[in-house]
Length: 259
Image (cartoon, rainbow, N blue to C red; front, top):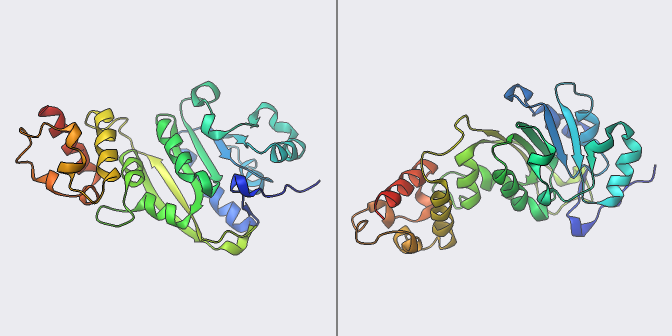
């Protein structure tokens, strides 16, 4: 079977180490109640081989690369419609999957943030994620308030998921090797379905705060607040990077109450 060529424009770096592939798959915990798992960017199927040995869940594969899709069709004819040739970022989750599901993958590094925001958009369905990312992105996902890596992605992911940095992966186990270290993280959906605030406003506050992260929140979110009513709010004198998720929820409620 002809091997698939890694394509730079798709950010492909194929994992070649089966021990690491097995470790990634074993990091899934179907006790969280899902029966379907979607692998993003399977390439030549090194993760898929281990996923398809499992009986706890039904496996789906999605790859935008037609060459990978054709290769996987021949390798896994039993998948049928569960092998999808499409862009994950355009996928309609509700049309394709049941209520609870997991996402796994050696994710393309050039769209890793977009993948995570796509997962956040579908957070009511995606209850677990296990994925390989550039180490820098993995650290950003797990960063805590006060850390220079802490940002919009950190807050949104930690608002809805428990984030765990599982292990670091060296460049030599990929073909072609990336110029950076990689890391595997796990996201587990919080038990609470929604935040205790106006979630649309929460997203606006967080984005505005970090889009001008060098400014105090009073200046960064000025368009969202009643300046007179919130003149004495000391939280607004801080920068966004100092606030935890709970602090942002509290601030969102204070802004909503003083409009």
